[in-house]
Image (cartoon, rainbow, N blue to C red; front, side):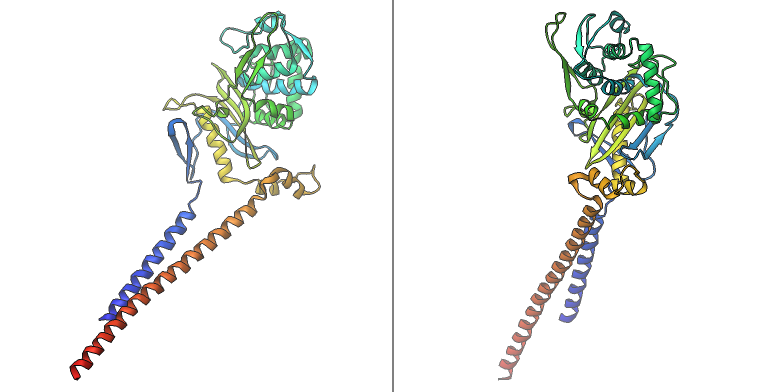
Length: 394
């Protein structure tokens, strides 16, 4: 009877240990791509399954790896759309390449007063003079339309002539289906681009260190002038960058917003997670059924999709980066101080294996202790019975 109880106890312990081990292993192997959670303010969550499909609300969208140009996600990326103020990144890169940032440019009557009511401005007055650096700042960060006109006139004399430079630059970058007629994206039926072309332009812009620095700024200002006595301070219009905003995304390092009624909401964004840099373009977005901003939700979802489904090592191995003789040198430049991602994964996997072996050993020790306890109890019972037997015999 005692032996049968011992066998039952032993079997129960083995079963419990087996369940514990498999449950812990299943927890460790949860696929991070099964559910995407975008954290909004007040601990509010937007959840979306990434197993089979990803819902993108915007009419056009693209996700591109910055170093190689590999497309990780696409939705109507070659369909012509109005780009609105995302246009300004092309104006900015031309200004940064053609001008000294300390050069002065004066606001003309046409540059200021051609802007229609309802469009974003920095309240620049005719005759005010600012540096190109200040104008590029307020154009990219606050989306000041007259600043773009002032820059265009400074470089080319007229915005019409500047548009020719824009189109030539776009073709140089590799754009396939764009036509720009003004430097700021003010609506015009002949002013259009595509998600693919804008991603190429953004990728090109991010190779310029000054551009990269500007788009990360949280705010900018125009200094006082004779026509405006106080400094004008402007906050970045990209909510992904603002830590107090519901759409804050910690890996976002810059971008450019855009809006007109025909173009709807547009957004170019760049994110960097462990030196894995992605470019996202969203065109013609509206609101979701929950009255949330589709351009921000789509952008966050695209970034998370990229980081959860790709890694930089695999992408670099897929592409022949001919400008580098040593592919390892290229990897080191991209990975930087973060180390090789695949090596980190191996370290994690080895850690998990060691952790599982520790659990198994601990389980065996627990079983041995319990068995020793019950064997000890059995021996005591046998001893007592033996003593009683000897007493009765006496």
